[in-house]
Length: 68
Image 1: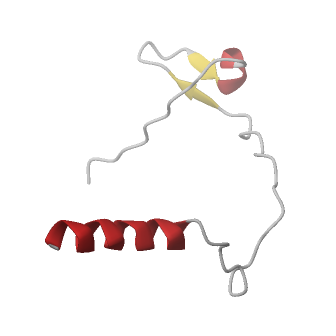
Image 2: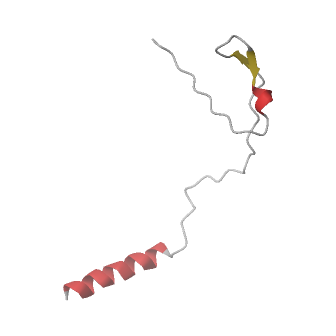
């Protein structure tokens, strides 16, 4: 009986998961494409200016941190 009730509970849960979602309280916004990052330059460790646009088409990870 225990196995039957567990299986029945799973089937009942699966049936509710397949039900149509309720969007009444949700605000659906239109898709907005990402905006490009502003142009800027920062010095590298040798003091040479490195511009963001030098890396166009490549993945760039920026890590800004502070010591305070």
